Image (cartoon, rainbow, N blue to C red; front, top):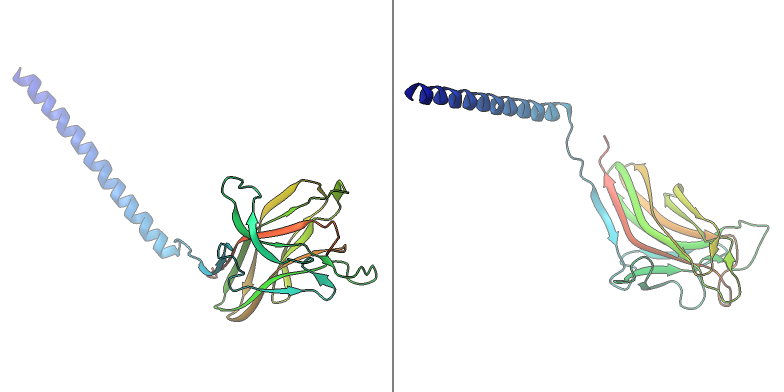
Length: 224
């Protein structure tokens, strides 16, 4: 009986020794991995949030509106911040809504006209990251389809860095998407615009689609 107890004790000691060895190895490898991350500069990259807007305040919250040379943001009542039921019928949220297009139809000039929102901000050097939920909805008592939902563009310092072209939209349909873009920037003052345009007329009495914007975020990532 004592021999069996002694054998069991020796086995327990062996198991404990193996566990201790594995813990020791894990600690060594974990510490070595941490040192490797520090020595190679690998670590979490945090972004500086320069602006975030969900329009729940009911206004533009720091953004200004603009129109292109022959553009309009819509007829009476546009632009507006109002409830958007697109995609969240249970708990709709506020969003910016416009109805962009040409103010006066001019096939000889720049066809894409409209406008959007913009801001000017000071930043350090880094990688500017822009994102927003955008979409188009169309309702018409006379037409089953509109040929052009709208062209969304992120513009930094007058340069287009990303675009999203929404083509034909059927009556009663809604198209929505996360629209993002990135651009390296130097330290200093920068102008940011979310521009929306169409090659057709818009305004009172025109069966144009409505474009909407929500959850806008402007971030600055440090340069690698």
